[in-house]
Image (cartoon, rainbow, N blue to C red; front, side):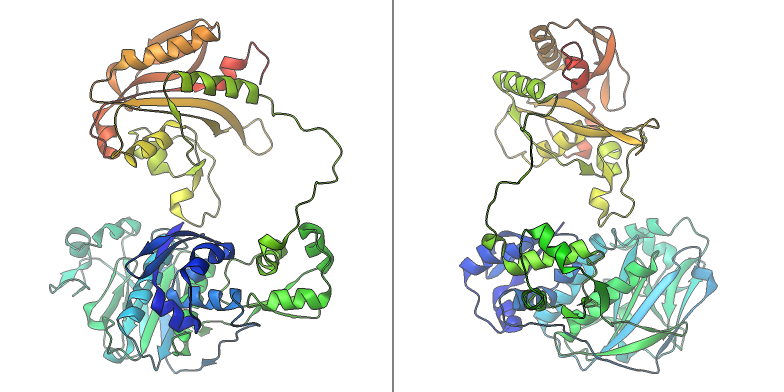
Length: 546
């Protein structure tokens, strides 16, 4: 999820409404974003990954206008045809095959508008764009170049230009080595040819997904903008373009289409989706009439007629009628729903294994550990890379909204290391644990993966060693009357000779040891750490609690 900050006075200008801090803190969160705080005249929110249209001040203010009743109904964005063309050569097909483009004219940019434009660009890169791997956006001063444009692949040593944030001409490979943004070269460096965008006179506008040219740098004097969006998924590329152009249109800019290989972009026609009112009412427990439904759906910026909801082009998150239901709930107001007891027969009971988990929790707290919770969704770098472990088979998200959360965790310990890294300013010793589910791949089940309950703990202090944590594991097993054996365990995550495989009643169940200094460095930790991770199912097997 992305945290964005907006100038409160600018939001007031864009919404046309005085915004009290009480409203910004309490009511706006019901729109689908978490309040982060106020600072120096700004308000910050954590915007959920499914609403990239709210990453800019313009997009956020647009959503706010609807939510606070300032606007209603579908906003249709008009486009004008232009004679500007972009030709895509086949040389980019194997490296970064998709491109869309648009022109925004008659802009009046000030410092706050430029800041908002840069913010939405970078936040889309991190979320929808998956750190520019899937989508990258280039924004250019249109008046400094001449159409038509060509998107093509070149050998990295064959061309050179002056990139943004530099006064030195460099070829593409040199940019990868010298430029602050050169780390993004990793996305395309395995290819023989790298992508660039040039104008009619062969001047380089952009080296996607790495950096734009200084030639087309956007300033407060810029009146006309050329936007290119490149990537590996055409749908995501088009969605990103729609979000950016509609945000700029909120500033009074005029959207002009660009012919990309004969297809006019952007396509801002509303998407039509059939929605059954009975389906909405059954899920929300309401009895909305068609008139009520129409009013609610219009108050979040949608249109409705003849059983079909018209979804604006910037709402890239609406993919199924259930997404419409969510917006109806937001419009109705979560605070207006009445709490009712579900009419479901049966008596509730704790899930199998919860009694054991509760006992483990009490014991760990008794040992002086503090319980924490980390996310089940994570990424391969945190799960394996920072832990200096070889990658293993994991359950991966097919279409993650952000690279930050792209797989399901297989181990709990990396999440605890992250918690430790975020709390270096706290007093020591730090003793934390977590009991939770991990997901392991399994060819035997229908889904190819299954949940497994684990417990993990770590201890961090100036002087800690293997014995400190092994004694905790030993005491834990004695309480449960289990036989414990610690065998030699080799792992790059642990220091040589200071780790053990945990064997419970003859069955492998986990590991314990001193975390390797390289792993500590990866998490920016300065004190020694000892840790363990155990399969809870093995602990509870004899008690038939799993």
